[in-house]
Amino acid sequence: MRRPRHVAKLAAAIVLAPLVAVTAPNAVAADEPAADAPTIGDFIQLADRYLEQRAATVTVSSSPVGAAPQIGVMAVPTTDALGRKLAAEYRQLATLGAEYKEIDGGYAGAEVTVTPNGPFSRTETTIRLQVVEDTKLYHPTDQVAAGAPEAEEYSIDHTLTFTRDGSGTWVLASDLADTGSMPPSTYMAEPQLDLEVPGEDSGTPDEPEGDRTDASSPSGASGPEGDPKAEQVAAGYDYNKMVAHANKHWKNYSDRFRRYGNDCTNFISQAMRAGGWKHNGDRRRHNSSWYYGHTSTIHTSYTWAGAENWYWFAKKWSKRTRILRYVQDMAKADVLQADFDRNNNINHTMIVTKPSIDGNHYLTYHTPSTHNRSLKKILHKYPRASWYAHRT
Image (cartoon, rainbow, N blue to C red; front, side):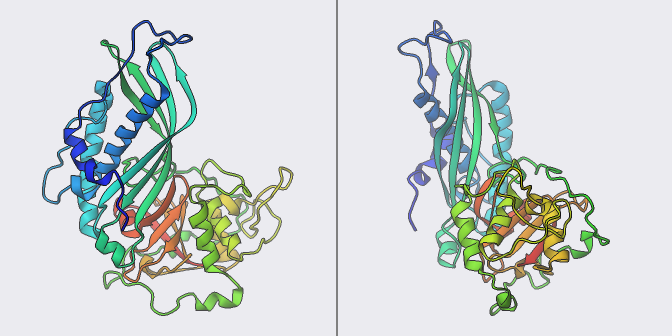
């Protein structure tokens, strides 16, 4: 397995790395920075070290089972308030990393790339920087040898704010991370709920709660045997094309489709379309229709980008999917949906991009952009959710 350049140093960096200070003369003005004023490159370096530390905290090397998490000093200088907040988050993440190690081997290391993504705004006392964090969390070598993907990947937009303390040192004051409806492994935020509004006139007499999928099978978890999707061959679906679309566009969004603020179900509909699902109907708000409007005058159906609406079209109206009893029974290109607060309104949609014979499948989704995340980790992090596993 290719080893990332950051992995060897990350665990030590959490405790041993000296604080990186960026100082600037007090004379720096908003419209006329001094010749030796810090540049955007200086703050990119700070952002890189901060996000490296966050990612490393959830890896196996920094979260030994049975030991209290030892986070040490911050990798970059912060305000007192942010420092306290991060210390608490890192303790939680280290504990979570130890739990992940127990359930599926955890993460062996991390690799972080930080790229500017927007204006670099400066005043005399505040700098605001927009960046994209691209992180790989590497799976242990033995897990990869057994068929796991090399790494889980995610891409997140950040707005970082730096302020100057009394000594003139720039310190990290806040991180506004766009983690969307389902935060990745290195963030502790709860899922954002009720981001998608169900369509009107759904015409559905049943409640989805009767279709809930059990999070674990009685035997502990075993994947499907044989070819579980043979029954759908007659429909002309191409599951390899569904997965190929998800693998290609999990981070680099397709320019053939609009991007929504909460984009998870839009992304899944694109994958289904790539694999052979045909447009159906023309009733935008009715769950019996499913189509994408390519122009501003042709509206897209609610079922295309609404998680709850997609469920009703896929399972009831079109019968293109059926609900599986256990999540471990999913196969390539099957879809998993989540109702995080169990209020019978589905919040999130994902696709299996790499199935596993042991039932620990790997899922990909948007909002945030995440590739090949372990099913066991998802179930562990959201134990209160209701799950709906669709055979596509």
